[in-house]
Image (cartoon, rainbow, N blue to C red; front, side, top):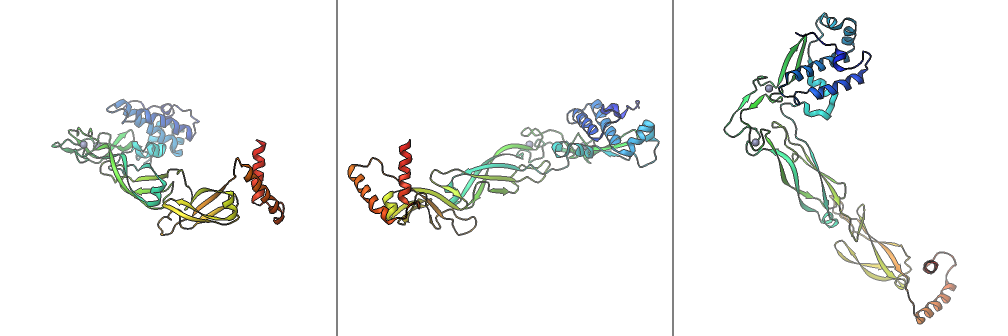
Length: 370
Ligand SMILES: [Zn+2]
Ligand SMILES: [Zn+2]
């Protein structure tokens, strides 16, 4: 066996390197020499194992201390308890975490969960609907039924790991355990890969998924469809499909919780005398009584004419913001009438309490300033 290289040289770090520096250095080498990136490259494989070994020693305080003091001999000279085996998969997982989950290919893995956005109209949120969503996702290959093997060809036990999915390698006093890269941990190899899925057993398809949308849903509402995500590798459980709703803005109604807000305009005479007008809610016309003396910006409610409450039989309200139109281009007769009215009106009102006419004239004043 060739002379063992210095662990610090292998990781290209100084002798005083701290944990972070060692991790960083190892990460770089693990990516560079990973067997998945270098198939059938014996040299890369040796470097990959060498780096893991260096990482294991330098990151274990007792081992590092012995190594610093006595070099490789210090470790080999130690009694049992050292070099009992390092698991590269564990190290990779430790260093890369979830981000490089793809390095760890087990026997079966749960499929990815998918998320999709669905836009519906306010009317659809009001009535509820049966939606159908097209989801691009990975499914089990229909040609080979997920086996990855061409029809008529066989799937055999992996000759590398004898079906265990893991291989054990000895290097020096180290026993290394890692996922078999011939079969990627499945323990099986395919003689003739399926042409439809290139032996992956999974294909990308666009699938139509049906979803029942409840009455009263709002933007941000989520439906989780179990098992409608991507199919897992090697028969793993499929992931979920998360559907996030967006209710599109409406040109006549604004939503505030379960209430709907709309606006209407009446004349200043209607506001002063009171009247009954027609206001549309989402499901049709309604009568709205405007009380005498209604002010600009007053809010009137029509109960039960808002949105349905989610999973309830009750409804929110329709809130009507009242706008009052000030007449423009008065003719002489109209002007005279208003002036006469103003004279008799002032005597009956407390001054300066912000009544209807105060508002009306302040609006006219504002207009004149323009
Ligand atoms: Zn296939
Ligand atoms: Zn194998």
